[in-house]
Length: 378
Image (spheres, helix red, strand yellow):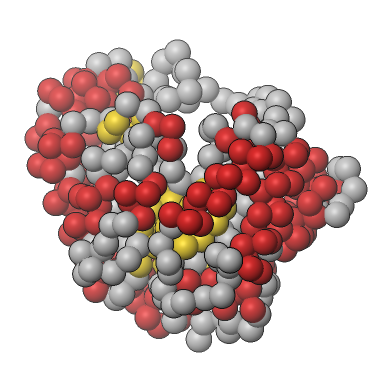
């Protein structure tokens, strides 16, 4: 049995997931990264967040009036100081001088192919062979129920990251080696997508069972960066050939179970939006408007079944919050509400809010979240 919805705020979130008319506009989690701001909104003392990250983080969410949390990461701000990342290990996409995997130096497209064929493909095949659907179903249920129990009845916990799908492997191999391999060896890259999809299909069959058996709230956010400010990282037509067929089949079990999936958008993803909807996704979260994401146009789109979309309309964390004024924040929130779908709209920030964002803008956004939750669109 699913965690019972017993509070007004969680019910507002659940009604919005089901796209029911509501009197107020619910809010998605407000993920601040600056400790002092988390403490200030929570009514805590300086240093309290480090001593009790879970308690202070949740107190901050309650104080703002958050209704829905999908990705529960209360300790994530501990990785940053007031000036951002202060001590981080360099990786494949964050400036590492050399990438070495299983003894192979990843310095070319051929090295990527060599590593995939010798190590990655056999590893995925072993995972497929050993996959235990019953155990995975129970693992998902227990994890979701435990998080819901921990965050308490004020918030509705929805899904994040336990529905799987094939992804671009640039985080493993680095941008240049991987995308050169993508261009020169598409048959190898597609085999990687295909094997990932084979394994994801099994996982998602378990996820579908978890949603049904535990009556979990049928919303899940999919997260994979596939665009920058210029557009998709690879040609969309190549994705049509190599990626989308495997992406689509990997999601079939959860789509059949009635799970509404929304996509987290980074960069200019406009060319992918209709393709994602055609696969069966139900909405979007996180828009970089300055990069060309047309919020108003997207909010007028429909799912492949002809329903309106679920939209998490976020105040921009790359433009308005860090560089705007409180009036800019207020105007953007009004714009998000006025142009968002009539049902199925959540408010929040477009992503994590980085240290150094002016406090006045944070306070204005928090006030706006409370206002729209109470007053709705009036």
